[in-house]
Image: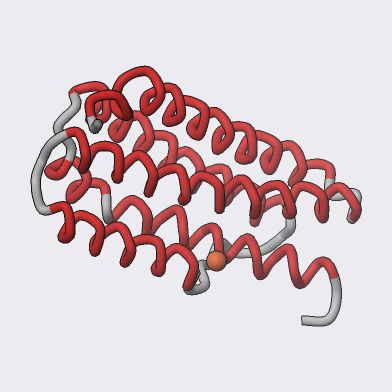
Length: 161
Ligand code: FE
């Protein structure tokens, strides 16, 4: 890697891997969640993630590259932490729900950080088509984060007291 363009491709591969891996944890979260609103949010989130994967493919395409993933240690670390947390709580209920929302928000914050950087880099490089899709990716991650925040502050956190 020796230029900004190489960094863009590297970070795209990282997110392509991260988005797909995060989907693998959805069934386990569904089993662990109690709140109907949280289950609904998980389903919406999974749909959004699948759309994010397709947007990423469009970005690769816009840059003339084949979509390809590269191991994201950050995402794997977050999944490991979430699994440990579920094991430590060990009981379906509001506390576990609050823990799940916290995990999902950390994944969203990672996406916001990465898509924000990618958007800045693609803008710098004048990659117009790529910036359009990266803007959509960033906005989706922000929106998902806001939804999770509302879910927590408008119910789940109170029940977990
Ligand atoms: Fe990563």
